[in-house]
Picture 1 (cartoon, rainbow, N blue to C red):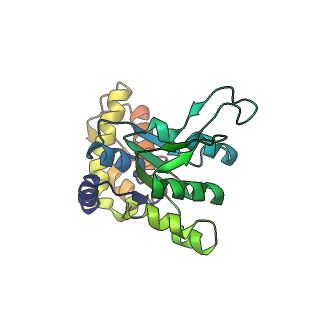
Picture 2: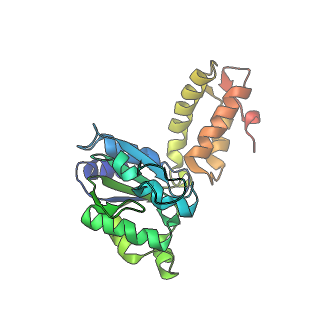
Picture 3: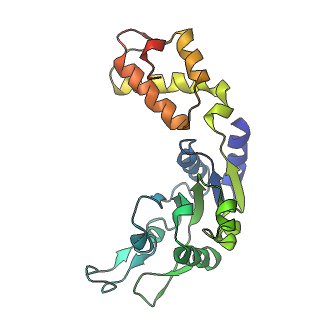
Length: 237
């Protein structure tokens, strides 16, 4: 993970578009935030958008905004995320969820810095740095026709792959101590650490949800614990 952090620090100082890949819960948005705050754009907005969290027919208006009268409920102009992030960083999580038509429009914006609001004929210019993230294998998505190859190569000017937690088990102890501190403060508990068997079981777990799963498990154990050290019997598996 230190190698990944070192790479992220180096690319943060540039204006390159970045693609963060890795399983769900590996910390892609955390890395995106860190890259933004290490960049020359750190004083400008960081706007995060999960492409899978909204209906596909609404994605375009969320990204680009819309003009008054574009559709029935559009009574006035609406700024899109590109305008909200002007001068800063736009983080597009789950980029693989974009439909082909919207992929083409995003590609145009990446290449020209220009876009249209929905229902508007006026060209708008944008100055944002794009960071995208995915838990999918986009190369396979290209082969099946679900993702544009030209958009992939435009987004992956610099690709950073975040390792799964099971591939970095030596970090579990450090992460566990950190999450214990945070969960203890949040829940007004006094937990000073954990027993050896507790950590052993953590290191043996597969962690399909990665760091996010570990964080949730530790917070659950902190809440349930009546002692100052977490014990193995608190674990949910």
